[in-house]
Each structure stands twice: as structure tokens, then as C-alpha cells.
Length: 251
Image (cartoon, rainbow, N blue to C red; front, top):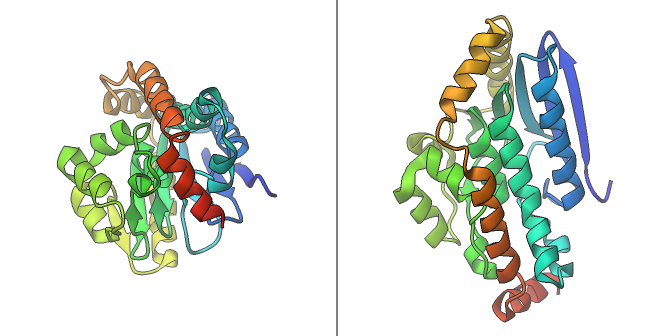
């Protein structure tokens, strides 16, 4: 449980991928690796027509990178490998042959915003505020930036990145295109998630697959791009500025 948990459930051609970590659904390397494997396997599963991505509990959707693991990074290679964990998950979602519905019940921070942006369609509650806080510890949202930019544009990405201490509410995120719909309650959101997933599960799977390709057209170079971005983050996490700020977090 210290490395989190991941469950995949398949019913009626709908796969539900649910992750959890006791530290506000943050992401250590092991959980990132398991998510990558899950999306790669579901992509090849003919019994799956659509995927729902969700997290456990009713507060934070995903708090991003595991700070406990960031603190332990001591070499550039270790840093690169950690951020490659996020790159691999996002690329697995992008390359997945199935459409992915995001179910966002609470706040998303840093890499959590990246997970949301990598979904093909997202529902959220009013509690689903977002923030890119990477600048505050001396790194930046380099790995997730292509996904976030694709959804909300350069101006909104700049606003989120540069104003690193401010939350943007769910309606701001909807206006920018990150969320398709925002609901007052989790129950209302879950009904809509289930309704859309059931509809999609009954459509021609070949049609859904081709639509997925069309939605992610012109992103074939992102395997290489994200690897380069992971290396940038891996170097920055070892800077004196970042080390000092991570130690403040540890204390």
C-alpha cells in the first residue's frame, strides 16, 4: 500500500482503471509503471471498447509526483527515470487504441493535470480545481506540457505554469477545454460517466479506434519529445534550489 494500488475491472466492454495512494493519490514510480502496463494491455484487449480512469476516495484526484520519492533522487539518471514514469503513462494513454474517459472528483496537481489532459473526454465535479505548482520547488511541468497545451492552449498553459501558487477552479478548466462537463456532486458525475461509457461501448469498436487515431494526429514524435523533457526535469530536481525546497517539504 505504501506504493499505492491499482485495480482494473472489465464489464460490458467497459474497463475501469482505478488508482489509489494514501498521500493524496500521488504517483510513485511503481504506480506509474503499473498504470503504463494497464493501458498497454487494455489497448490490445478485444473485449474492451472504452476505458474509464478514476481514483479512489472523494477528495484529491491526483496530487502528481510523489514528493517522498523526489527527495530520494541522487543522480541525473534516477531523476530522468522517475520523470520517464510519467512520460510512459501519458504516452500509453495517447497510444491506447481505446478512448479514455476521465472521472475527476477532486483536485489535480502537476502530473495529475497531465493525466486529465491525456484523457480523451473528462467529467469533473466543482471540487476539481487544478494547479501546476512545479515552479515552486524548482522544476517545471515539462513532461506534461504537450498534453496540457493540446487541450487548453499556450495562453492557459502559461497562466497555470507561471502562477504556480494559484488554483484554477473547475469552471475555469471547463472554459479552457480540459473538462467537458462539471457537476455539483460526485453522484451526478458518475451517472454521466456511466451513461457515456455505455453508449460508447455499443458503438462500432473499429470506428472508436479510428477516431482515437484522428484525435491524436501529429503527436507521433512525442515519444522522443517526452524523453527529452524527462531528462530536463531529472537535471532540475538535483539543482540546489530544488534540493533546498524539497528538504523544506521533508521537514
